[in-house]
Length: 155
Image 1 (spheres, rainbow, N blue to C red):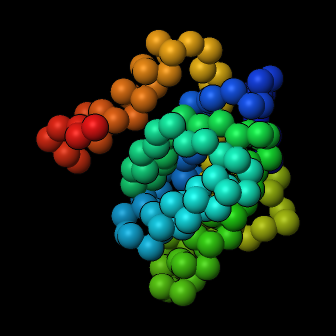
Image 2 (cartoon, rainbow, N blue to C red):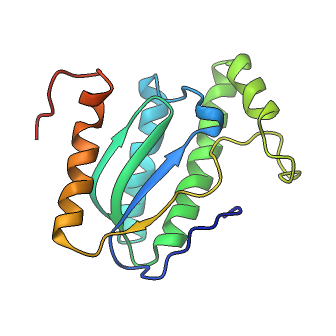
């Protein structure tokens, strides 16, 4: 899954994760790209017993509170599948500017691919208490308000 300093020591416990598009490029500005994320999460809910407590998809990153039978495996599957599908979509739509940027900003050690969609890692943070769970879910719910996308969070 790439090089990351973050480790998952409790793979079946809920974690707060952040996935960021390479160089913060605005990929999730269209319904089709967001649908790739949603469809992948639905698949993992069935396939990997993924439990999604909360999520928010912003234009260039997403936050989730989730757990699964093996969170590292689920996240690897999620990022691999979504990267492949996002690239297919961008090629189909002839989005050459974004594709060029995904090629240009690709990490040098990633020689097996022409493009890189996601930043490496996903910064998993173990949620150990109900209080921390509430704080992380509130952060997710109010993130679009803070960024000015909506006037208020509707829960």
